[in-house]
Image (cartoon, rainbow, N blue to C red; front, side):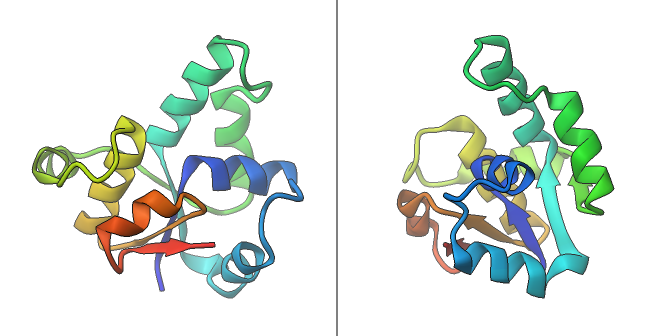
Length: 126
């Protein structure tokens, strides 16, 4: 299975946060060769860092993700086209972009946000 990490999963993974569930840890271990993170997550992290809500900077996250051998997923025109046609199950623009990217690639989005499960089988809640 090819997976895409939701932003909070990226952060929890890097910080080895105890809130990262055992299911998430096992999934990351089992699919370590095909784990992706989105530049949209770096953008979201940059906003939170700039507001003082997150200590990690987007540069630090990008370096750590590269060291972890997770693949970086850029935003493409196809992702944007998918985004505009998504149903509005979720209002967060970053989560909506991750859903659009997961659909287009295809990837399974790994998240603990139960509201995203409304997008169907491309979402894996952990």
